[in-house]
Image (tube, rainbow, N blue to C red; front, side, top):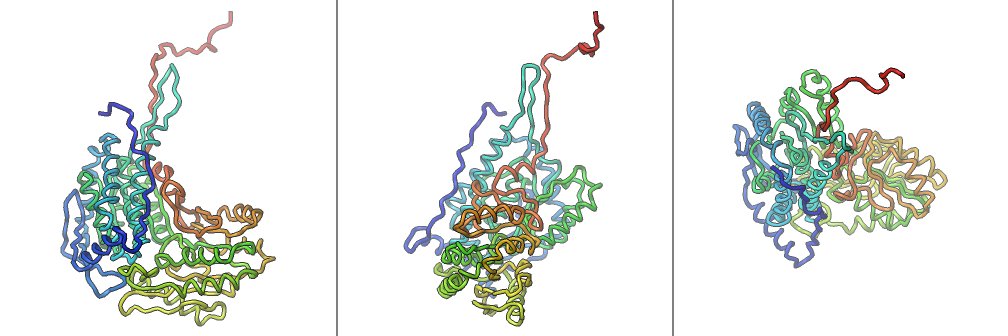
Amino acid sequence: MSTGFFKVPKAKNEIVKSFSPGSPERIEVVETYQKMISSISEVPMYINGNDVKSKTKKTISPPHDHQKIVGEYYLAEPEHIDNAIDSALAAKENWENMSWENRSAIFLKAAELIAGPYRSKINAATMIGQSKTVHQAEIDSACELIDFLRFNVEYVTQIYSNQPESDSDAWNRVEYRPLEGFVYAVTPFNFTAIAGNLPTCMAMLGNVVLWKPSSTQIYSAKIIIDVLKEAGLPNGVINAVYGNAALITEKALSRKEFSGLHFTGSTSVFNSFWKTIGENISNYNTYPKIVGETGGKDFILAHKSANPKQVSTAITRGAFEFQGQKCSAASRGYISNSIWNKVRKYLEDDLKSISMGSPENLENFVTSVIDEKSFDKISTYIENAKSSEDAEVIIGGKYDKSKGYFIEPTVILAKDPNYVTMREEIFGPVMTIYVYKDLEFDKTLSLVDKTSEYALTGAILANDRYVVEKATNALKNSAGNFYINDKPTGAVVGKQPFGGARGSGTNDKAGSMLNLLRWVSPRLIKETFVTPTDYRYPFLEKEK
């Protein structure tokens, strides 16, 4: 039982290490990388605190060296999924009744384990399994995950402390109960931090979780599980199963105890989940909470008053870091014709200087895309652009999958603003640019807003403040995260809550209190101190 109103340590953003030549963190991560890639890790499922193996397993290979095997993971059979859900439900009573400060302590400890002894392990695992550069791994798997854990604990305390007004007659208070039943977390390959955040943020509030990581992120997911074990997470609170996504989802969504979905992935998959939940709605004990962050077709809009070098840098960083495999990555650009030639020259110079290869070489800016399916999809878009009358490849355009799934940073110049690569999510290192006439800026604002089904991120670059204000207002529904004079990616927990609407999701803003509020079911308690004993109100009295 709590005996005080406890304050948690003030959340602070973890500082991103530089990994400059000769630095201790550089030496450590290279040594850890080499050690991990030279061994084979076994990744069992994690059910009720136990490592669980099945009859079937698959190999794990680095996308940048797909012939090499670094691990094996086990695929869930129907009974494993049922056991995982049943284990969660069995753990629910004890977990939701644990005092909030003790639940919080587990995740605060997890944050510090990642910041300390697990930092090089989770960075190296992300570099190997997802082909992230050391910089991208550090800001993701280390810093952002640490930030999620620290800030979410702080948000939990703020939620619990948000109470209604009371007076001398009655005491009003709100309990922020966890959801009934269990919740289902489906996480993507591209951010280890998201894989860690989706199940843990729900668990912090007393929920129990079935977690299905992406098959191409399981290598680093294993490190997350190791951290949670060491942090003291009780058995059954978070259960991880791998394998057939359709089977796991069918099992989860068919249970009457299903009470919530926390999803990051493609728009089409999220739509199918929503449809299934709707079709099963009469079978559930309660209306499920549905939260999704899905696709994006994120834009950069450059006005004639913008600095061309700044525009080029925003494109290079926004479109090609982590090979464009971010839902927030810049994917379409609208550049004023009066600055285009300068932007193009700077962009050509930038991309000529970029090196591509294994993340083990810390001098590489670009590595490989995640798998062969992604490689084939992206290269098809590039080839179609090469032969199109409505577009041309002006930078890059080469690709090779003989050793790893490598695709050059590629820039397509679209003659038609509705060309396919201006509209469809590619999720790779491809940026399409449309050059508009200076006098058609207002028309271009409408193009930006109407061309894509998505509304995740976008950026306006301009030195004219009237233009900045006009674009900010005109594009208010075009992006959930809007950037002024910056690239449209790189949200920071606690500073830029992240999420979009339209085809980009439910805009519940991960990295803020708004998201956590989705995982509670409030109960209002009113306690009257002096209970009335007469039903009659004064207005009922007879006039004298």
